[in-house]
Amino acid sequence: MSGVLPYGRQSVSEDDIAAVVRVLRSDWLTQGPLVEDFEAGIRNATGAAHAVACNSGTAALHLATMAAGLREGHAAIVPAITFVATANAVRMTGAEVVFADVDPQTGRMDASTLEAAFARAGAGSQKIHAVLPVHLGGAASSVAEIAAVSGRRNAMVIEDACHALGGSHPDSRGRTVPAGSCSDSAMACFSFHPVKPVTTAEGGAVTTNDAVLAAHMQRLRSHGLNRQPDLLENRAEGFAASGEVNPWYYEMPEIGWNYRISDIQCALGVSQLEQLVAFRSHRDALARQYRRLLAPLVPSIVPAPEAEGVQSGHHLFVVLIDFDALGLTRAHVMKELRQQGVGTQVHYIPVPWQPYYASRYGKGDYPGAARYYRRCLSLPLFATMGEADVPRVVETLAKVLKLQ
Image 1 (cartoon, rainbow, N blue to C red):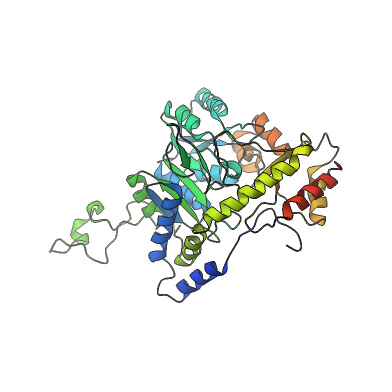
Image 2 (image 1 turned 45 degrees about the vertical axis):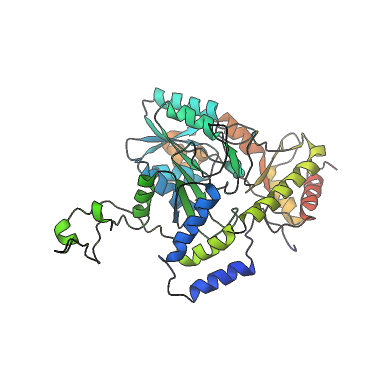
C-alpha cells in the first residue's frame, strides 16, 4: 500500500459494491427488506435471539440505555477509558455517570475496579441501575465477573461491544460464546464505522435475548411509533368496526428518534458479514505477527495483553510504550512515524478528563486509566494490510524509538 499506512480502514470488495448497486436499482432505499436481512446476519454472527439495527454505534448505545429504563435520578457505571459515546449515551437519558478505573495494562474495567466504583457510588448515595463494560480494542472485558458483581446489586449489564464483533469470550457457565451473545448481559451494542471489523459506512446494532427489550428498541429507533395492535391505546381510532386495525393508524406512546438504518447501508452490511470470518482470520494473523516481531523489543514496547480464553475481534492493535523512560514524547513519535508512512492513533483520552465531565463530576482519581493512557498507541491493523506491512511498522517504530 502506497502512502501513509493508516491505523484502520475499511475493506470494500466488488461484491460489496454490487450489493449496494442492486439496492439503488430496487424499490427500497430505506425501511425495506435488507434491514431484516442484516439483522438476521448479526444474530447469526453473535448467537443472540434478537438484533436491532440502527444508524450508528452511538445510537445503539442510546437505544440500549433507554430500553434499560435509565432516566434522571439513576446512575450507570462506565469505564474511564472508552470513546465518549459510552458515557454520553448514559447522560442522554438524564442519568448520571459514575466512572470506574481500569487495569493499567489492558485499559479495561474489571471486577475489582467495578467493585470500587460501586463503593464510591454508594458513598455518594447513588443507586447504580446499569453497568457498561467496554470491550476495548476488540477483546472482551471479564463479562462473567462483571455480571456477577452487577447482579449482586441488581444492575443491568449493557456491553459496549463496538470493537468486538467476531471475537469470543468465556461465559459464566464455562462456555466460549461469541461477542454479543448476551449470555451474561441484557444487551450488547455494536458499531459498523469504516474502521470496525465490518462496516455499513455508518451504522450500529443492539443484540439481546429479551423480546421485550428488542421490541422497545425497534419503536425507539423510529420516533417511538407503535403499530402493534395489542399495544394501541385509542381503540376507537385505531380499529375499524370489523375489528381490524386501520391500515394507516399508528400511535406514539413515548418520544423516540430517527435512528433508522437504510437498506443501502444494510446491503453493504450483509455482504460484509459474509466476509467476517475471513476478515477476523486475517486480523488474527496480523496480530500474531505483531506479537512475534515485537517480542525482542519488550519491555520497551509491550503489546496490550488479552485475558485467557478471550479471542479478540482485533479492531485495534495497541502497544504500551513508556515514552518518558525513552526520553521521547508520544506526539513526537507519532509525527515521526507519520512522516515515514505509518499512521497511529490513541484510544482513548480518559473520559473523566473531558471538560464536560470534569466540570460536572470533577476530574477524579483514576490511576489505572492515567497510566494506560500515557503509554498506549494503536498501530495499523485492518483487513487489507499485506504481509510486508507489519514488519515495516515494527521496524519503523523501533527506529523512531531509537531501539535499533
